[in-house]
Length: 353
Image (cartoon, helix red, strand yellow):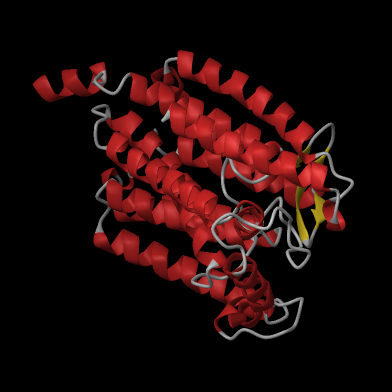
């Protein structure tokens, strides 16, 4: 997995360097390569530290870890900085997108908490509300609907993985879908706007227009690329990374990137099946699901098969401080995989009683 992470980050650096020296378009004054180098360096240090640590030592703090993630979302709702319509940012030495940090913290936290199936129906309802619904409400309050959808999907996956009762899954899926649908429809017809990608137009402010321009950029690239970034892609360092990269370097390089992404997804799925410790498996599966969903959604939306909602490719896109968070998360995954043959002493003792 480390090799794949290094290759993906290296491709991202190459793209940011090319974008920086190109000096054209709305991003011509941005030092993306220099900043990405700093973020990767910091993230690599954190990844190494977490890789060397014993992940099992944090399990006893799982309730506090999850609670801290919730508190971050509450805090940003009151004191967050509004950027691009989302009041979900902390502006300090670094511009930090709080939902990315809080979701990672929460999915690590609820992996070590007592399972829902071990509670009675009253306790289950309260915990579904606290662990599943409250984070979605807080994320939607900051207009971070994409992150709310990601968290909801991961929580559903968690319920399935832990063999939650059918009524628990149905209750959560139903309530979360209704909440997000109501919020999207009530906020200036956002639901209609985001799903108009199915009917492409020439309105530059619509997501379907962005998909059309992305497809045009990729179709005109050829095998070896044009050696330039398309002016029609507004954010080549972010959600427009893949079409911009293919337009610049060509479809041979683009196919190599897609193969790296598929390799990462496949390796993550295979690695998760080799972990014997229940807690480690849940943490690995939760974080792995977050990465896999981001990769699949980011690629699908470029080709017009998913709503264009600004999800970026992990490790490849500029990312900002997200790159640091992603590498730190990979450090935790590598720590778990490093100890994949270990079995929790608590679990083993319990099974022999």
